[in-house]
Image 1: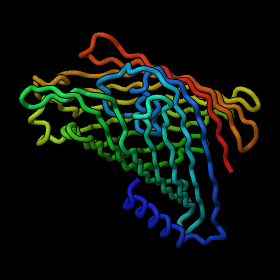
Image 2: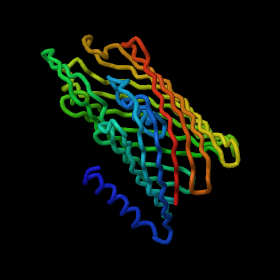
Image 3: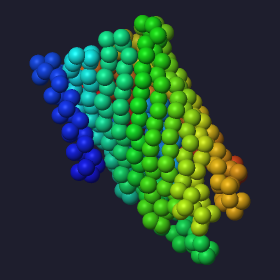
Image 4: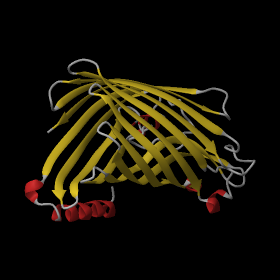
Length: 333
């Protein structure tokens, strides 16, 4: 996170602090330490962020199947909440990263800032900023306008801003409307892939009973590359995306819960250049996840999970499989 972004977060934090009495303030810190094994380092970040709560439309990875590795994910979230004349205010700053044991070039950081205001009516407005700098996608082939081919590291810096509008319909049912705007900026020589995107979609949170919770959601997204940059290259990654997810959390035993997630994503490329490798192509992604959560006490939880994904480009003969398994520890104070 650069100095300007840190300054913006600090200014916003200071403004909210100014209108909330210190006596009303509550602070908390949540930490996570997760250890993974992935069988595809190139797809690891893409699959882990495929979630209604994260960034499901990660860029296409042109060279998957780059081998496995162990990955360590440390993260910490600082939260502050208080009351003001409008209701309740919540602020959080989340910082973490993925640290690869052997393929260190894939190591990168993840940062998110959140501001939320809950009104007396129960309506909640949340504003988010998410930043991922220098995400390494792997080696990729760059084809120049004259047809010459060279190989380079492909990297991406990702920004998105999001707004959530939550409205309780009943004690157990809440509907959310989500909007996002973002930028995916590539390093040279892949800057013709720079993409501007926007997203719209509804979420539904349903507490079926004290032991079962269900989260459903759908996103519609358009991503548009800079046409002035893509005219010289047959490599336009513009797209229309449909994403749907269902997440079921079940209280299995006194301290044991299970989370079961299914994701589907369809990515239709919209390049109008018949010579483009993406012309007329699409990608279908199916992904499932199982995670068990065991509460040691009110502050500490042990996590064990497995995630399996399958993605298929219509321009490729075979689908790509990916598996991630993890053991984690969450602690809050």
